[in-house]
Length: 625
Image (cartoon, rainbow, N blue to C red):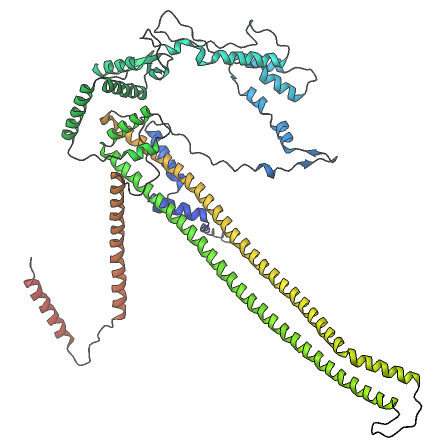
């Protein structure tokens, strides 16, 4: 019999990643954006991109994070086999050859590129670097000349010329001539040389550059001409966007021209400005019942600092129109909530980082204070022990000196009696006293006379040695204290560096999160305007005042207040949802702990059941319907 095939073992569950970045991404997707547990950043981005693509919108791919470039001091020269120092940049310049790539990336469809390639394939013994240089410098640069045609409705055509095919360009003899010729053509391509760009097609006089608007077809219109085109298109039926040379005039230019026209009329005619203001206020009071949430000037001023005033005005006007759409108002509120949650998360995490670093610093300071106290106690104990040893040594020396003094005096007394010819008891001994005996007597007398000075010198020497050793010991103690202080400073510096690195990484991560959220906001805004913007004459590419990323203390907008109220409502609902669950758990625990009463033997259980049924019926009859 054939053996049964082994069953496939189930796939192991995916490992749970507990890294800091994964935890931050989880918090970002769950708590900030309030998405489900299965959605990730990539899946949500793919969903938004797919939805926008289905509506016909063009969405740019998400930005790819660029790797950090190495610092200049980290470059080290490599050593070749023959011992020479070769720079890494030289290898990069030889291997990459960006100039040749640039020459190959030029207009591949043109015949000049093919002729240039065939021309560059020379059989001469030239180096690769010279070939790549010639391929770039000898490459023709297309120029665009706008000739003023007789028929003003026909746009000027661009006539690119290739240097290898044009008879006007002589055969180059050196790379420098190619460079000079290219610079000359670039000078001819400048817009300043085209005097027709400074003139409107409907005006005879030259106007300032800020009053002219260049259309996609190449024609230039002044503000009055654009305003006239927009008014003329608005009076036609059906309403169509004005065109020029078959190309639609961008709505941004029309709004810009309209705003400039209104501003010029308001500055020249105050009566018209006052009447227009009253008319707009009356229309706003009668337009809708629901109040329109209006953001303060702070957000638009913060988000549009670098934009021109006209663009900011158009964006604010479009925002006021878009806020009348209920769907966009809800979307703007949702974005404000996400912004507020993201800012609170950023502030909370930074506070946690700072508090954690402060706690680590306090722990280090406390630990080193304890070590310093222990070291000082140990040093003081050692110094006291050494001082006791010094005192004991001096006392022992003095005792030895006293014994020596007594012995010297006894020996001198016996020697003096011997030199007198007597014994110690005074009887004569009858021996001959020699000169040597007298010399020994004089020596003993000198020793007796100088013994005090010698003893004092010995004590001074002992004290000097003790002081020297004590001074060396105190120096060692100071060195130990300084070393401990240096260790403390190094540890505190390490904690500060870790904090700076964490704050830098968090700042980079938050910047990336803000870019991701801003991209999603733009896509959602375009989708909303694509679906519901027709009622307010808005299209998906109209500029809107972006949501500011900062909230100044003491200044709150309507959206901030409304978003905070919604956030508090959500938190209250979450708390209410959590409370019944806790009560049910507590009730189940009480039921488990409460003992059920058992019927005593000898009682009639059927009568008890009958009584319960009768009470239940009575309760049902008396209960209100």
